[in-house]
Length: 106
Image 1 (tube, helix red, strand yellow):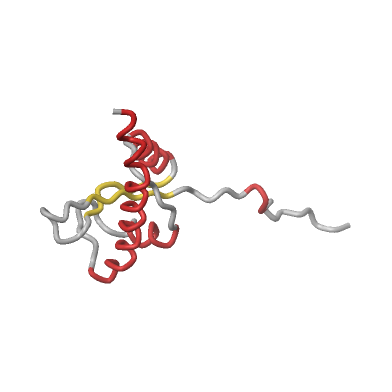
Image 2 (image 1 turned 45 degrees about the horizontal axis):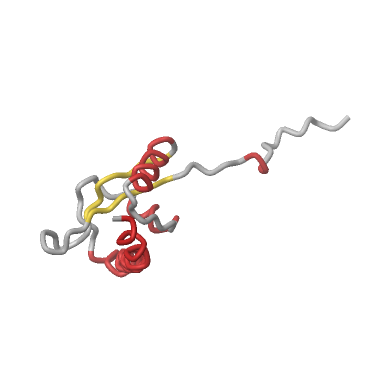
C-alpha cells in the first residue's frame, strides 16, 4: 500500500497581493515619500483608493517588495531613485494621455 499524498495542491496557491503608495511634490520634497503600504485587504484598499482618485497604477512586484520594507513617511533612499523615476515617468506619460479627455468633460 502506498502512503497518502499529502502534498499541497500548488494550482490553488494564490499569492498575497501587496501595494504601496508614494507621494511626491518636487517643490516641497527632495524625494518621494512612502505614504501607504499593505498586503491582502489593505493592499486592495490602497489600489481601490488610487483608482477612485484617478491615480495611475503601475505594477512592479520587485519594487513593491523593496518599498514595503521602508517606514511610512520615509523618503525613498537614493539607491531607489532610478527605479522610482521610471514609475514617475510612467505616471507623467499616463497623465499626459488622459489630459485631453479630461478637458472635454469639464
